[in-house]
Image 1 (cartoon, rainbow, N blue to C red):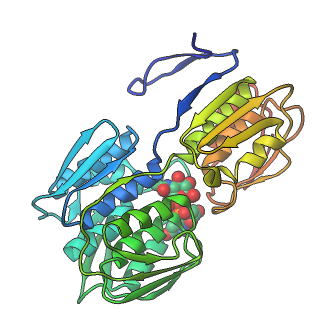
Image 2 (cartoon, helix red, strand yellow):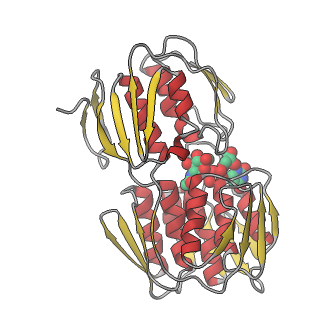
Length: 366
Ligand code: UD1
């Protein structure tokens, strides 16, 4: 018997949850969306088919597939595996409606520019997390030799001679900017060094995929990444990493409902920034190989100070589910959101459900 009855489905505009029962069970965590999207964009660079396994079935992966088809690639999906085949690459633009479907479509900029020598795309626009600037992406791509004109919400980009390696120091370890630099640098002439690169597992996964296709990237997962440009990339088969944010969300659900959940196919290393927070809240977390078991007995305790930080800090994407958990803890929890300016929209909805939350700038007291 299911512990929580969920009526509705993803395509419907509402989900109805009949709650109040501990969540108990076992499941395999799906592949990471934030890995699948840049890896799908990277397939543009390959001169032979790539099969990407463990792709989650989400509107963002569908949008990436539509962009690839529009650009002239063959895209076939069988379950969680997507095969991208180079066919007739003639286009270097992405229509505005496809760009707007997902903010992370900006990761196509580096790949299209490297492949076609030009790109014409619209600004991705803001989102529910507040303004999401792309200045770091653009400055870095300019350093690699991409001329970029910003024209009424559009980016007109052209490689003047060849993309050429450069030393790029990021003022913030932006995940998307690091990914765009990798995509533009792998087939650029010479060496690129990225200083203060994002260290997120999804950046490492992209680098692993690119190296499997013949790229020369060293240092992914560290603050300094070095890329030696190669002439071309071949195809490969690659399985994207499990989604650590989805896993953290299930963990919060187990904590909230005082349940016991076993998550299979997770990475202990990727989960290490969130596990101490669940333990502080009074949950027991056991890792055994690629499985994680979380259980809660007794009252939830407050979490003293959850500060979101770039990896290996506590992930901003896990802040909302952990805040939901802390609303029923016996005491006061404090959150400091250091990554995005406007990431407490869920607080207003939790308050409507009876939570006691005060937000002031980057701080939320629950
Ligand atoms: C990615 C993830 C997102 C996650 C975030 C932080 C994907 C598809 N999305 O988003 O789920 O929450 O990392 O871990 O992988 N910034 C600038 N200028 C830029 C780029 C970023 O100021 O050019 C700022 C952003 O406004 C934000 C911070 O840097 O305040 C972090 O952004 P970034 O790491 O780039 O996040 P995304 O790649 O957009």
